[in-house]
Image 1 (cartoon, rainbow, N blue to C red):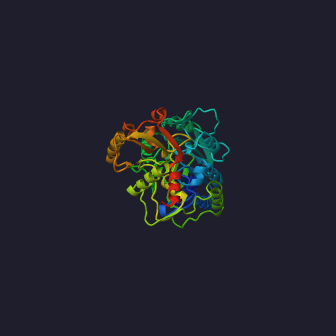
Image 2: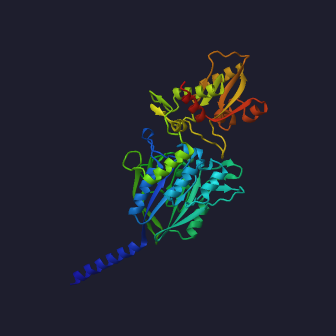
Image 3: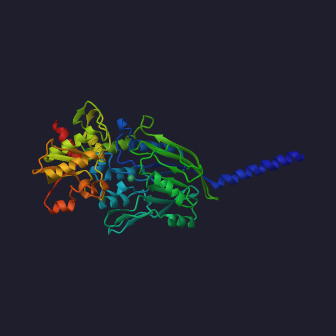
Length: 467
Ligand SMILES: [Zn+2]
Protein backbone atom coordinates (compact mmCIF):
# COMPACT_ATOMS: atom_id res chain seq x y z
CA UNK A 1 0.00 0.00 0.00
CA UNK A 2 2.78 2.30 1.02
CA UNK A 3 4.48 1.57 -2.29
CA UNK A 4 1.32 2.37 -4.28
CA UNK A 5 0.84 5.64 -2.40
CA UNK A 6 4.40 6.56 -3.18
CA UNK A 7 3.88 5.89 -6.89
CA UNK A 8 0.69 7.93 -6.78
CA UNK A 9 2.46 10.85 -5.12
CA UNK A 10 5.31 10.70 -7.64
CA UNK A 11 2.87 10.57 -10.56
CA UNK A 12 0.82 13.47 -9.13
CA UNK A 13 3.95 15.56 -8.60
CA UNK A 14 5.18 14.82 -12.13
CA UNK A 15 1.79 15.66 -13.66
CA UNK A 16 1.37 18.91 -11.78
CA UNK A 17 4.98 19.87 -12.53
CA UNK A 18 4.34 19.33 -16.24
CA UNK A 19 1.14 21.41 -15.94
CA UNK A 20 3.09 24.27 -14.41
CA UNK A 21 5.74 23.83 -17.08
CA UNK A 22 3.10 24.00 -19.83
CA UNK A 23 1.98 27.36 -18.49
CA UNK A 24 5.49 28.68 -18.33
CA UNK A 25 6.30 28.03 -21.95
CA UNK A 26 5.18 29.77 -25.12
CA UNK A 27 5.79 28.07 -28.45
CA UNK A 28 6.66 30.34 -31.34
CA UNK A 29 7.78 30.04 -34.97
CA UNK A 30 9.96 32.74 -36.48
CA UNK A 31 10.41 32.91 -40.25
CA UNK A 32 13.26 35.15 -41.37
CA UNK A 33 14.69 36.53 -44.60
CA UNK A 34 17.56 38.87 -45.49
CA UNK A 35 19.18 40.42 -48.57
CA UNK A 36 16.27 39.67 -50.93
CA UNK A 37 17.59 42.53 -53.12
CA UNK A 38 14.49 42.98 -55.27
CA UNK A 39 14.24 39.31 -56.35
CA UNK A 40 10.87 39.34 -58.06
CA UNK A 41 11.18 36.25 -60.26
CA UNK A 42 13.01 32.96 -59.76
CA UNK A 43 16.23 32.54 -61.71
CA UNK A 44 17.27 28.88 -61.52
CA UNK A 45 20.41 29.47 -63.64
CA UNK A 46 21.68 31.91 -61.01
CA UNK A 47 20.27 29.82 -58.15
CA UNK A 48 17.95 32.64 -57.09
CA UNK A 49 14.47 32.33 -55.60
CA UNK A 50 11.78 35.01 -55.44
CA UNK A 51 9.55 36.97 -53.12
CA UNK A 52 6.60 34.99 -54.60
CA UNK A 53 8.13 31.78 -53.20
CA UNK A 54 8.73 33.45 -49.85
CA UNK A 55 5.02 34.37 -49.86
CA UNK A 56 3.99 30.74 -50.41
CA UNK A 57 6.08 29.51 -47.48
CA UNK A 58 4.88 32.26 -45.13
CA UNK A 59 1.23 31.55 -45.98
CA UNK A 60 1.70 27.82 -45.42
CA UNK A 61 3.29 28.21 -41.99
CA UNK A 62 0.81 30.89 -40.86
CA UNK A 63 -1.97 28.39 -41.64
CA UNK A 64 -0.43 25.55 -39.67
CA UNK A 65 1.12 27.23 -36.60
CA UNK A 66 -0.53 29.33 -33.89
CA UNK A 67 2.16 31.90 -33.20
CA UNK A 68 4.25 32.97 -36.18
CA UNK A 69 6.50 36.01 -36.53
CA UNK A 70 7.92 36.98 -39.91
CA UNK A 71 10.95 39.25 -39.87
CA UNK A 72 13.44 40.65 -42.38
CA UNK A 73 17.06 41.56 -41.68
CA UNK A 74 17.49 44.20 -44.37
CA UNK A 75 18.43 44.88 -47.99
CA UNK A 76 15.01 44.28 -49.44
CA UNK A 77 16.01 46.45 -52.40
CA UNK A 78 18.49 47.01 -55.26
CA UNK A 79 20.50 44.78 -57.59
CA UNK A 80 17.89 42.07 -58.27
CA UNK A 81 15.29 43.40 -60.74
CA UNK A 82 14.37 46.30 -63.00
CA UNK A 83 10.89 47.08 -61.54
CA UNK A 84 12.33 47.42 -58.02
CA UNK A 85 15.07 49.76 -59.31
CA UNK A 86 12.87 51.80 -61.66
CA UNK A 87 10.13 52.25 -59.06
CA UNK A 88 12.77 53.33 -56.50
CA UNK A 89 11.85 50.46 -54.24
CA UNK A 90 8.07 50.97 -54.34
CA UNK A 91 7.43 47.54 -55.83
CA UNK A 92 9.25 45.66 -53.06
CA UNK A 93 7.85 47.91 -50.31
CA UNK A 94 4.32 47.19 -51.56
CA UNK A 95 5.06 43.46 -51.65
CA UNK A 96 6.33 43.55 -48.08
CA UNK A 97 2.93 45.01 -47.18
CA UNK A 98 1.13 42.17 -48.98
CA UNK A 99 3.30 39.52 -47.30
CA UNK A 100 2.52 41.30 -44.01
CA UNK A 101 5.92 41.02 -42.35
CA UNK A 102 5.81 41.63 -38.59
CA UNK A 103 9.10 43.49 -38.21
CA UNK A 104 12.17 44.56 -40.15
CA UNK A 105 15.50 46.30 -39.84
CA UNK A 106 16.73 48.35 -42.79
CA UNK A 107 19.89 47.46 -44.70
CA UNK A 108 22.31 49.82 -46.43
CA UNK A 109 20.60 49.22 -49.79
CA UNK A 110 17.25 50.20 -48.25
CA UNK A 111 18.63 53.72 -47.73
CA UNK A 112 19.86 54.18 -51.31
CA UNK A 113 16.83 55.25 -53.36
CA UNK A 114 16.60 58.72 -51.83
CA UNK A 115 14.81 60.39 -48.96
CA UNK A 116 11.32 60.24 -50.47
CA UNK A 117 11.58 56.51 -50.98
CA UNK A 118 12.68 55.93 -47.36
CA UNK A 119 9.80 58.08 -46.11
CA UNK A 120 7.34 56.10 -48.24
CA UNK A 121 8.65 52.74 -47.17
CA UNK A 122 8.65 53.55 -43.43
CA UNK A 123 5.38 55.48 -43.26
CA UNK A 124 2.07 53.99 -44.33
CA UNK A 125 3.27 50.45 -43.81
CA UNK A 126 2.06 47.61 -41.63
CA UNK A 127 5.61 46.48 -40.96
CA UNK A 128 7.37 48.50 -38.25
CA UNK A 129 11.14 49.01 -38.56
CA UNK A 130 13.41 48.60 -35.54
CA UNK A 131 16.71 50.43 -36.00
CA UNK A 132 18.61 51.17 -32.82
CA UNK A 133 21.50 53.01 -34.51
CA UNK A 134 19.90 55.18 -37.21
CA UNK A 135 20.43 58.91 -36.78
CA UNK A 136 17.77 60.80 -38.69
CA UNK A 137 17.93 64.58 -38.52
CA UNK A 138 16.11 65.47 -41.71
CA UNK A 139 12.96 67.60 -41.69
CA UNK A 140 10.88 64.74 -43.14
CA UNK A 141 9.08 62.73 -40.48
CA UNK A 142 9.60 58.99 -40.44
CA UNK A 143 8.50 56.27 -38.07
CA UNK A 144 10.97 53.76 -36.72
CA UNK A 145 11.74 52.31 -33.30
CA UNK A 146 14.98 52.09 -31.32
CA UNK A 147 13.56 49.00 -29.66
CA UNK A 148 10.27 47.22 -30.18
CA UNK A 149 8.14 44.75 -28.25
CA UNK A 150 6.02 42.07 -29.94
CA UNK A 151 3.41 40.10 -28.03
CA UNK A 152 3.40 36.48 -29.19
CA UNK A 153 0.79 34.53 -27.23
CA UNK A 154 1.86 34.82 -23.60
CA UNK A 155 5.40 35.93 -24.41
CA UNK A 156 6.67 39.47 -24.74
CA UNK A 157 9.59 39.55 -27.12
CA UNK A 158 11.88 42.55 -27.30
CA UNK A 159 13.71 43.42 -30.50
CA UNK A 160 16.65 45.66 -31.25
CA UNK A 161 17.77 46.40 -34.81
CA UNK A 162 21.26 47.24 -36.05
CA UNK A 163 22.23 48.55 -39.47
CA UNK A 164 25.82 48.72 -40.63
CA UNK A 165 27.66 51.83 -39.44
CA UNK A 166 29.09 54.26 -38.86
CA UNK A 167 28.17 55.59 -42.32
CA UNK A 168 26.90 58.84 -43.78
CA UNK A 169 24.29 58.26 -46.48
CA UNK A 170 23.40 61.88 -47.11
CA UNK A 171 22.93 65.03 -45.03
CA UNK A 172 20.81 64.10 -42.07
CA UNK A 173 20.91 60.33 -42.56
CA UNK A 174 23.66 58.56 -40.69
CA UNK A 175 24.12 55.25 -38.97
CA UNK A 176 26.09 55.23 -35.74
CA UNK A 177 28.21 52.59 -34.07
CA UNK A 178 26.52 49.47 -32.73
CA UNK A 179 26.11 50.69 -29.18
CA UNK A 180 22.76 49.03 -28.54
CA UNK A 181 23.28 47.74 -25.03
CA UNK A 182 21.23 50.68 -23.69
CA UNK A 183 18.24 49.57 -25.81
CA UNK A 184 18.65 46.01 -24.58
CA UNK A 185 18.73 47.22 -20.99
CA UNK A 186 15.61 49.32 -21.61
CA UNK A 187 13.83 46.24 -22.95
CA UNK A 188 14.81 44.19 -19.90
CA UNK A 189 13.44 46.95 -17.69
CA UNK A 190 10.12 46.58 -19.56
CA UNK A 191 10.03 42.95 -18.47
CA UNK A 192 10.31 41.18 -21.80
CA UNK A 193 10.72 37.41 -21.86
CA UNK A 194 13.34 37.24 -24.61
CA UNK A 195 15.43 39.65 -26.66
CA UNK A 196 16.28 39.21 -30.32
CA UNK A 197 18.59 41.38 -32.46
CA UNK A 198 17.70 41.89 -36.12
CA UNK A 199 21.03 42.89 -37.61
CA UNK A 200 22.34 44.04 -40.95
CA UNK A 201 26.06 44.15 -40.25
CA UNK A 202 27.39 40.86 -41.72
CA UNK A 203 28.23 37.50 -40.21
CA UNK A 204 31.72 38.37 -38.95
CA UNK A 205 30.37 41.47 -37.17
CA UNK A 206 27.54 39.38 -35.71
CA UNK A 207 30.15 37.07 -34.17
CA UNK A 208 31.92 40.07 -32.61
CA UNK A 209 28.57 41.45 -31.46
CA UNK A 210 27.66 38.34 -29.49
CA UNK A 211 30.89 38.77 -27.52
CA UNK A 212 29.98 42.37 -26.68
CA UNK A 213 26.27 42.22 -25.79
CA UNK A 214 24.73 40.99 -22.58
CA UNK A 215 21.24 39.73 -22.03
CA UNK A 216 20.38 38.81 -25.56
CA UNK A 217 18.97 35.48 -26.81
CA UNK A 218 19.29 35.36 -30.58
CA UNK A 219 20.82 37.22 -33.53
CA UNK A 220 18.99 37.13 -36.89
CA UNK A 221 21.44 38.63 -39.33
CA UNK A 222 22.12 39.72 -42.89
CA UNK A 223 24.37 41.81 -45.20
CA UNK A 224 27.27 39.42 -45.87
CA UNK A 225 25.22 37.02 -48.06
CA UNK A 226 26.27 34.22 -45.71
CA UNK A 227 24.32 30.98 -45.91
CA UNK A 228 24.16 29.21 -42.53
CA UNK A 229 22.55 25.79 -42.92
CA UNK A 230 22.24 25.39 -39.18
CA UNK A 231 22.23 27.65 -36.14
CA UNK A 232 25.71 28.92 -35.28
CA UNK A 233 26.25 28.57 -31.53
CA UNK A 234 29.92 29.51 -31.56
CA UNK A 235 33.05 27.52 -30.88
CA UNK A 236 32.00 26.66 -27.34
CA UNK A 237 28.60 25.47 -28.62
CA UNK A 238 26.64 27.52 -26.10
CA UNK A 239 27.11 31.07 -27.33
CA UNK A 240 24.32 33.40 -28.51
CA UNK A 241 22.84 31.67 -31.58
CA UNK A 242 23.21 33.36 -34.99
CA UNK A 243 21.15 32.62 -38.12
CA UNK A 244 21.56 33.94 -41.71
CA UNK A 245 19.77 32.83 -44.91
CA UNK A 246 22.18 33.89 -47.68
CA UNK A 247 20.77 36.25 -50.33
CA UNK A 248 18.50 36.77 -53.37
CA UNK A 249 15.62 34.75 -51.86
CA UNK A 250 17.59 31.53 -52.14
CA UNK A 251 16.18 30.38 -48.80
CA UNK A 252 13.94 31.29 -45.90
CA UNK A 253 14.91 30.52 -42.29
CA UNK A 254 12.44 28.63 -40.10
CA UNK A 255 12.98 28.66 -36.31
CA UNK A 256 10.78 26.69 -33.92
CA UNK A 257 11.26 28.15 -30.45
CA UNK A 258 10.05 27.86 -26.90
CA UNK A 259 10.15 30.84 -24.57
CA UNK A 260 9.98 30.35 -20.82
CA UNK A 261 8.04 33.33 -19.53
CA UNK A 262 8.91 32.68 -15.88
CA UNK A 263 12.63 32.28 -16.34
CA UNK A 264 13.01 34.46 -19.47
CA UNK A 265 14.69 31.70 -21.39
CA UNK A 266 14.63 31.07 -25.12
CA UNK A 267 15.18 27.55 -26.45
CA UNK A 268 15.49 26.70 -30.14
CA UNK A 269 13.80 23.33 -30.68
CA UNK A 270 14.37 23.12 -34.40
CA UNK A 271 15.89 25.10 -37.26
CA UNK A 272 15.46 24.63 -40.99
CA UNK A 273 16.96 26.65 -43.81
CA UNK A 274 14.26 26.06 -46.42
CA UNK A 275 15.59 26.19 -49.99
CA UNK A 276 13.60 28.25 -52.48
CA UNK A 277 15.70 27.32 -55.50
CA UNK A 278 14.09 24.06 -56.70
CA UNK A 279 10.43 23.23 -57.25
CA UNK A 280 9.62 22.27 -53.65
CA UNK A 281 8.17 25.70 -52.94
CA UNK A 282 6.16 27.16 -55.84
CA UNK A 283 5.43 30.84 -56.47
CA UNK A 284 2.29 32.23 -54.86
CA UNK A 285 -0.17 32.96 -57.72
CA UNK A 286 -1.57 36.17 -56.15
CA UNK A 287 1.87 37.64 -55.55
CA UNK A 288 2.96 36.51 -59.02
CA UNK A 289 0.06 38.50 -60.45
CA UNK A 290 1.17 41.63 -58.57
CA UNK A 291 4.72 41.12 -59.85
CA UNK A 292 3.63 40.77 -63.46
CA UNK A 293 1.68 44.03 -63.00
CA UNK A 294 4.87 45.67 -61.72
CA UNK A 295 6.79 44.56 -64.83
CA UNK A 296 4.03 45.94 -67.08
CA UNK A 297 4.09 49.26 -65.26
CA UNK A 298 7.80 49.86 -64.68
CA UNK A 299 9.72 47.65 -67.12
CA UNK A 300 7.39 46.47 -69.91
CA UNK A 301 10.24 45.12 -72.06
CA UNK A 302 12.42 44.08 -69.14
CA UNK A 303 12.16 40.36 -69.77
CA UNK A 304 12.09 40.33 -73.59
CA UNK A 305 15.17 38.80 -75.22
CA UNK A 306 17.48 41.28 -76.94
CA UNK A 307 20.40 39.04 -77.79
CA UNK A 308 21.50 35.43 -77.68
CA UNK A 309 24.90 34.26 -76.41
CA UNK A 310 26.50 30.95 -77.41
CA UNK A 311 28.66 30.76 -74.30
CA UNK A 312 28.46 31.89 -70.69
CA UNK A 313 30.22 35.14 -69.87
CA UNK A 314 31.62 34.59 -66.41
CA UNK A 315 31.28 37.22 -63.70
CA UNK A 316 34.33 39.53 -63.65
CA UNK A 317 36.08 37.50 -66.38
CA UNK A 318 38.19 39.24 -69.02
CA UNK A 319 35.34 38.73 -71.46
CA UNK A 320 32.87 40.52 -69.17
CA UNK A 321 35.26 43.45 -68.68
CA UNK A 322 35.85 43.64 -72.42
CA UNK A 323 32.11 43.76 -73.04
CA UNK A 324 31.60 46.55 -70.49
CA UNK A 325 34.47 48.71 -71.78
CA UNK A 326 33.60 48.20 -75.46
CA UNK A 327 30.05 49.35 -74.74
CA UNK A 328 31.34 52.37 -72.77
CA UNK A 329 33.74 53.43 -75.53
CA UNK A 330 31.12 52.88 -78.24
CA UNK A 331 28.34 54.80 -76.48
CA UNK A 332 30.53 57.79 -75.66
CA UNK A 333 32.62 57.76 -78.86
CA UNK A 334 35.71 57.57 -76.70
CA UNK A 335 39.24 56.42 -77.54
CA UNK A 336 39.57 54.39 -74.36
CA UNK A 337 37.50 53.07 -71.46
CA UNK A 338 38.60 52.36 -67.90
CA UNK A 339 36.76 49.95 -65.66
CA UNK A 340 36.73 48.19 -62.32
CA UNK A 341 35.65 44.59 -61.71
CA UNK A 342 33.41 45.27 -58.74
CA UNK A 343 30.26 46.52 -60.56
CA UNK A 344 29.94 43.19 -62.43
CA UNK A 345 27.77 41.09 -60.15
CA UNK A 346 26.65 37.95 -62.02
CA UNK A 347 27.43 35.71 -65.00
CA UNK A 348 25.63 36.31 -68.28
CA UNK A 349 24.33 32.85 -69.06
CA UNK A 350 24.35 31.45 -72.59
CA UNK A 351 21.07 31.62 -74.47
CA UNK A 352 18.70 34.54 -74.70
CA UNK A 353 19.54 37.67 -72.74
CA UNK A 354 16.97 40.24 -71.57
CA UNK A 355 17.46 43.83 -70.33
CA UNK A 356 16.92 42.54 -66.78
CA UNK A 357 19.73 39.98 -67.26
CA UNK A 358 22.00 42.91 -68.15
CA UNK A 359 20.74 44.91 -65.17
CA UNK A 360 21.58 42.17 -62.69
CA UNK A 361 24.94 41.61 -64.46
CA UNK A 362 25.81 45.30 -63.92
CA UNK A 363 23.26 46.66 -61.41
CA UNK A 364 23.07 50.22 -60.12
CA UNK A 365 25.03 50.24 -56.88
CA UNK A 366 24.69 53.61 -55.20
CA UNK A 367 27.15 54.79 -52.61
CA UNK A 368 25.09 57.65 -51.18
CA UNK A 369 21.36 58.16 -50.79
CA UNK A 370 19.66 58.76 -54.13
CA UNK A 371 21.53 59.82 -57.25
CA UNK A 372 23.88 57.90 -59.45
CA UNK A 373 25.39 54.44 -59.11
CA UNK A 374 29.09 53.71 -58.87
CA UNK A 375 29.16 52.62 -62.53
CA UNK A 376 27.43 55.73 -63.89
CA UNK A 377 29.42 56.62 -67.01
CA UNK A 378 31.37 59.88 -67.52
CA UNK A 379 34.01 60.96 -70.03
CA UNK A 380 37.18 62.98 -69.43
CA UNK A 381 39.99 64.19 -71.68
CA UNK A 382 43.67 63.57 -71.06
CA UNK A 383 47.03 63.66 -72.79
CA UNK A 384 48.57 60.54 -74.33
CA UNK A 385 51.36 60.90 -71.79
CA UNK A 386 48.95 60.59 -68.87
CA UNK A 387 47.00 57.85 -70.58
CA UNK A 388 50.04 55.63 -71.10
CA UNK A 389 50.97 56.07 -67.42
CA UNK A 390 47.41 55.07 -66.51
CA UNK A 391 47.66 52.01 -68.73
CA UNK A 392 50.62 50.78 -66.69
CA UNK A 393 48.72 51.27 -63.41
CA UNK A 394 45.63 49.49 -64.74
CA UNK A 395 47.60 46.60 -66.26
CA UNK A 396 49.29 45.92 -62.94
CA UNK A 397 46.12 45.84 -60.84
CA UNK A 398 43.97 42.71 -61.07
CA UNK A 399 40.88 44.66 -59.93
CA UNK A 400 41.09 47.11 -62.83
CA UNK A 401 40.68 46.83 -66.57
CA UNK A 402 41.72 49.23 -69.35
CA UNK A 403 40.50 49.13 -72.93
CA UNK A 404 42.99 51.32 -74.83
CA UNK A 405 44.24 51.94 -78.36
CA UNK A 406 47.23 49.76 -79.23
CA UNK A 407 49.40 52.84 -79.88
CA UNK A 408 49.25 55.89 -77.65
CA UNK A 409 50.78 59.16 -78.92
CA UNK A 410 52.14 61.14 -75.98
CA UNK A 411 51.21 64.59 -77.27
CA UNK A 412 47.68 63.80 -78.49
CA UNK A 413 44.51 64.45 -76.44
CA UNK A 414 42.32 61.41 -75.80
CA UNK A 415 38.70 61.05 -74.78
CA UNK A 416 38.35 58.44 -72.06
CA UNK A 417 35.16 56.83 -70.66
CA UNK A 418 35.28 56.16 -66.93
CA UNK A 419 32.84 55.15 -64.21
CA UNK A 420 31.80 57.41 -61.35
CA UNK A 421 33.58 55.38 -58.65
CA UNK A 422 36.94 56.33 -60.22
CA UNK A 423 36.27 60.07 -59.98
CA UNK A 424 34.63 59.93 -56.54
CA UNK A 425 38.00 58.91 -55.15
CA UNK A 426 36.34 57.56 -52.04
CA UNK A 427 37.86 54.13 -52.48
CA UNK A 428 41.55 53.67 -51.73
CA UNK A 429 42.06 51.83 -55.02
CA UNK A 430 41.27 55.06 -56.95
CA UNK A 431 42.49 57.54 -54.34
CA UNK A 432 46.08 56.61 -55.11
CA UNK A 433 45.91 56.89 -58.89
CA UNK A 434 47.25 60.44 -59.49
CA UNK A 435 46.49 60.47 -63.22
CA UNK A 436 42.74 60.22 -62.55
CA UNK A 437 41.24 63.61 -61.67
CA UNK A 438 38.67 63.85 -58.91
CA UNK A 439 35.12 64.83 -59.82
CA UNK A 440 35.42 68.45 -58.59
CA UNK A 441 38.72 69.12 -60.37
CA UNK A 442 37.51 67.56 -63.63
CA UNK A 443 34.34 69.63 -63.42
CA UNK A 444 36.26 72.84 -62.70
CA UNK A 445 38.55 72.28 -65.67
CA UNK A 446 35.52 71.72 -67.94
CA UNK A 447 36.94 68.30 -68.52
CA UNK A 448 33.93 66.28 -67.45
CA UNK A 449 30.98 65.08 -69.46
CA UNK A 450 28.09 63.21 -67.92
CA UNK A 451 26.44 60.65 -70.21
CA UNK A 452 23.44 60.66 -67.86
CA UNK A 453 23.50 56.89 -68.17
CA UNK A 454 24.24 53.99 -65.91
CA UNK A 455 26.42 51.20 -67.27
CA UNK A 456 23.53 48.75 -67.70
CA UNK A 457 21.66 51.23 -69.94
CA UNK A 458 24.74 51.60 -72.12
CA UNK A 459 25.17 47.84 -72.27
CA UNK A 460 21.51 47.25 -73.20
CA UNK A 461 21.72 49.78 -76.05
CA UNK A 462 25.04 48.29 -77.21
CA UNK A 463 23.73 44.71 -77.26
CA UNK A 464 20.43 45.71 -78.88
CA UNK A 465 22.38 47.26 -81.72
CA UNK A 466 23.70 43.80 -82.60
CA UNK A 467 27.40 44.65 -82.70
ZN1 LIG B 1 23.79 45.11 -46.93
